[in-house]
Image (cartoon, rainbow, N blue to C red):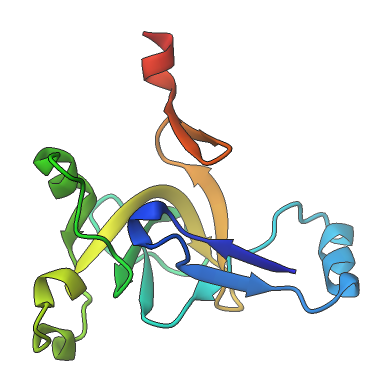
Length: 148
């Protein structure tokens, strides 16, 4: 079983976690774990878990999940304010990426709005949202808009 995670803004697949056999899955469930890791970054993607000051958090501490790398989109069409809020400069980008022809693209990261933490084995646990947004069958729903 492979669990693949990623928002549309990062070409959908940003991380992956594979459970090799049913026994491994059963072992997780027997330990009382009800979630499966979203894994580690796939090729050409970088994942950061940051606090509210956009600083890296240590293993086990929850923070907002950011995604950088080749899969990050350019922004939202005709929505410059939202683009500026969600597609932010990547202070962790490799200096080599700055030499690429499309450095503005590779030096950005996407703020997912997802709460996550690094696990000791190097994989990521998804913990929920930092806002009140939910997804139903792939559609994003802002609960505040529904309430209004």
